[in-house]
Length: 199
Image (cartoon, rainbow, N blue to C red; front, side, top):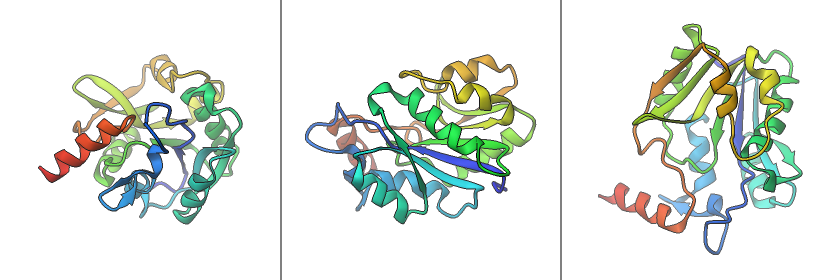
């Protein structure tokens, strides 16, 4: 199903709001956040599995390699998510046989495999972009067609792929729950997630 899709896991953020450590290394339900975020695609076969990681983020590189991802180096993580996606997008579209790109964020540990399959089904119905949405707010994970490749490679700053999504009329929104799309920026976010899981 994903044999011509490149999976890009964005994992080069600087954790500036996460007090005293690397948020992707933080433990949630007995595993690091990064590992939890990658689990939703662990049983899927892709043309490429790529993760974008900063040049000095050695723990993330080692963890991603254990999970079967090839690393794309981000030489300037401070330039934001858009720049990171451009780095990953360039590596993905240069790979042989890639006709679509799936973008995931490494600080979203509870995206489900079922949701990824829903995105793919909506995408296969003929959209250029399939993106997740909850209560009217869109976010990754998202799937992009070849028509988007040029635009993905020119992104910069902190806007991520929103400008690409807005440029294409052929897009579909795929509903997800708030818990599926929850991301971790601070230790309070982590505590809230753990409390909800226990509750």
